Image (cartoon, rainbow, N blue to C red; front, side, top):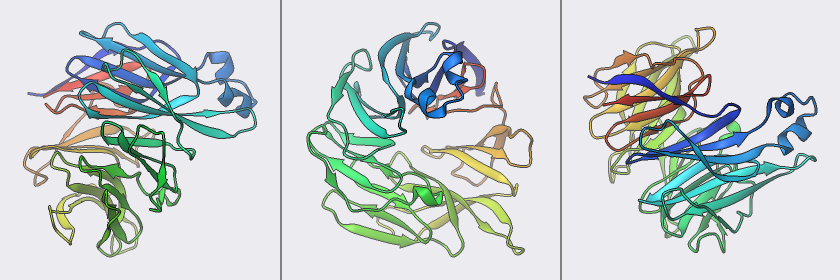
Length: 327
């Protein structure tokens, strides 16, 4: 039977914004700020003092070593093959100008080296093989095939400013995006394809399963025009029409994270009627037909989530705590 446990606490005032775990090694990537700088009423000055950090741990995860320190904060991490990682961060000057930076590690996060910066204020990264991957801002996507030495604008518009989820990238180098009316994808040969969404469907989350198929979590309005139940949709391999997989009847769930394995689906969602909102894990072991609701060890302040291939779930939570769900 699956069990939730609090594994450790990380150093105070360190905020992980993305996490990564694999075979007994863990990384917390984000930012650090002493309390007095956090409370500085000059917001631009405060943001400019953030320290981008990567904390690394092995074994029992009781101690964390700082393996990277710089200006800004890390937003995204990607690992195209075992041992190789790319991390993207954003720094801000006292004028409020943002710039992105990219670093890589070839030894499972022990050492990090800078790469050429992306040409846009990027907030996300996904490499699908060594040297080749994408970065994106809230509006645009750029592609590199030489570890960031050169970048090409994909001319594939992102709609994150309109509240849609960020892109995802599969192992073949296809980038997937969702907008108001369609699911779109762009392959390495720059071929574009679009699949219409069901009328009225609004996507909250976009992810890929272990086979590279896209899955959407979202909702449609009910008969009175209010937010309807949370639904899951997927696009079968080679398909041109989205299939409805599941509907979770509780009407006011806000989807936060979706993972789709082989038959197992993990959906973190909070009930927006709760004050403050409380996150729960909804689990299906039959592909979405039946669901079971679980409460994590720490229910509030759920931060970034990472699911290992064996189904182990890691998530940051409030009060500097790292929790884990073993399968």
